[in-house]
Length: 214
Image 1 (cartoon, rainbow, N blue to C red):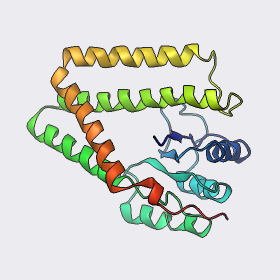
Image 2: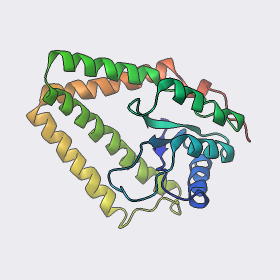
Image 3: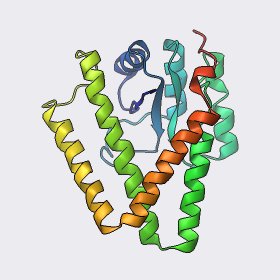
């Protein structure tokens, strides 16, 4: 199993550098950041641009593969984004394993089919299931990381009570979705399983070249 994490682009580089270096040192396979204009939970806080952050992270990491977890075409033209991605290569290759295009494509196909044959409510239920499962796995990973390195730079208040409450809430929501909308929830779970298997088979991160140092 290969595990990744998300590092929000909110901290000054002095602190953010420690986070990226730590992710590289403890053995994460991938490290991602969001490409939003701002974050809903912190509208007044700092939020740095993703490409400069990844370029700086590439300069201080050796092995971990980097990328944007979300890059929206709503404000990012694909051509411009592709050209921006060329810049970090002067320092190091960003996400040499490549974009998980198979997973993105399969999820998009499932969403399009549901949007064309169903209702917005069904499509929303699909998206909620995706969020519950992926965010839940991120919380599960936290326990493994803290067991491996208790003095991590990512501290959670009242650990492990808060993560357990978060995870328990998500499990209850997922169970409720299975009871209320079993068909669409099972379809979402099957889609997640399918894209995971296909992505693992088509793009094997172990075959990707290792990042050169800056």
